[in-house]
Image (tube, rainbow, N blue to C red; front, side, top):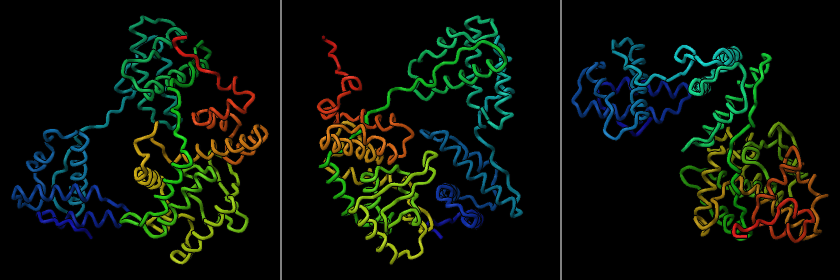
Length: 428
């Protein structure tokens, strides 16, 4: 079952417990590794009892120098699982305690006392009645309640001045934390309005501007695909996966597919006669993508080769488990692996991701149209539909973020002075 050797008096129980977990469908690698550490811990101490003692548990629970509390909690959690299993086998043994109880800020532990407290409590009750845990937001609302008290706010409405004072960016505060505060106040404002109270609803987000993606040059693409095509399967891959990388990464670039769209293609979704790819329920939309002739030929060759290995597969790109599709985290990892082998790794403005291939497809496609006819406006609806965007604005977003496309826009696009104005120097 495993190369790990269990030699303590608990070895039979540990092995039986691991087998039970794997029979239930759990991989349980982390648990197995942690219980192996506990087994060695018992051997080193010469422990000879066949049941846990409180003294042994206390020693195992102790926080070690430099150890994070999260890791300590994991150690104790896996021992708790083993102890529970031993009890189910009739072994009388104590159960390790939970070290750190989950901190759940709720109405029992948070007392709201400001003038807006009735509305805060009503909002929380409403959210939980609708099935939401709403635990994290309770803490934020408690902080807002204390803010109102500190401001000596005594009215039963939510004015703009109070909201904006609360939403001021705090030193060291991340965008996610501030956005959570915005979300809580928006919910509170809407709830108060539903009760007939005046309330100011702030804008949806305090997010920072979207980062400019890296657009790969033709030479960077050529080098990247050279590394992909020359990949030989390692211990994490199968032969059919190595073949899939060459095809799937090209689908991301040549057809502008999203990561999840490419990974979860079924054999039935890819028509190798007509070159049509059917995308279902992606961002709540269905669409059909047409492959070019050379992309279609590549898919046909791939399918022909894979059918010799997996004749009855469901997924067009199968993972190591032939009954499951390639996982997007695997593709993320592989993209980084191939990119790091190119001479451009670490030498570009922003490290690209798989989604950069989709960005690059859009920019290169519009660039080609503009070089050919000078005006891509009439072709934009086709590209919007092809990409599965809801509006033209989403397609413009891809292009207008691309620094590499600016020169062509300024030269050929009659509306460029409005869309992308000249940036004035600070010294002017």
